[in-house]
Length: 400
Image (tube, rainbow, N blue to C red):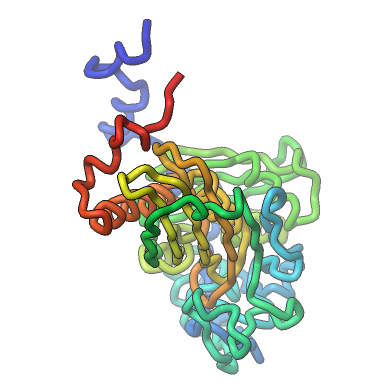
């Protein structure tokens, strides 16, 4: 049957009855004997040096089993993006903040208690002393000479840069439309906040992790890498997921910390974040400033496009450096544009880390191109619809 024959035809989805009846098993529904509960102490400033973490008062509170900082868990830093756009090793993210905090909401310590309420109460009594540092939130100023550095040892806020395409893209143009677009930062906000359950696995001697991950195999690699164990010792199970949107492709520090706590305590541990934590700690998307030059003949025929993009990685690059590359690969969109000159700079700022979100860099290309086409039409005093099809469909791609 042709694919198009499916459109308009009702198709019974196998998961619907379970979800409609409320019978699906989400991560928070995973209940194991002896379950403990975790909550996280988070940074209240965007940039600062951690001078002291005082857990003495919280340790004595009812139900508290353990409180862990980065030094206690002794985990390897999390990995960054590899080819084709690798990030500097010096910008790798610690599972829990060590010497510095780099964005509001960054996890500094983990409290484990008999109940979730006890863990949350104890978090408020962990005293963290932070010496404030200058804050950088504007991606367009990240490479200024006087910009605060997030990673002093790296010596720059530049995480990655790359050119893509042909030089001289505007050489044949009669007219050039120039604009700067801001594709604003967005938060994923799925129905289900981030969650995880970790437990020792008696069958293998390793550990199990239940989490709403879109990429369980890379999650297994991330957890194993941080713990310094073989991947086959980590078994990852994905229950029902209450919304992914790309933000769940990443493996989060809280999920890794949970497995580390289960290893230390030899008991299962659960964590479910609050909505405010989701807004701060779950990776954001988009966040690009795009300088666009679209060239055309006087009759509206597109001759080339030149793009320079600044991409915000947030506080840690992770896979954020891949997003602007995907923008470049989609820069011609649905149009027949003979020459594309694209380059980007990905920078770190004191904000929530950026990652994949609903198209992962490619909707940013569509947005900039369609806006540019409309503005080019205005510059040429043409109907926006006409410039997309004239003359004789010259701007339309050849199909076949």
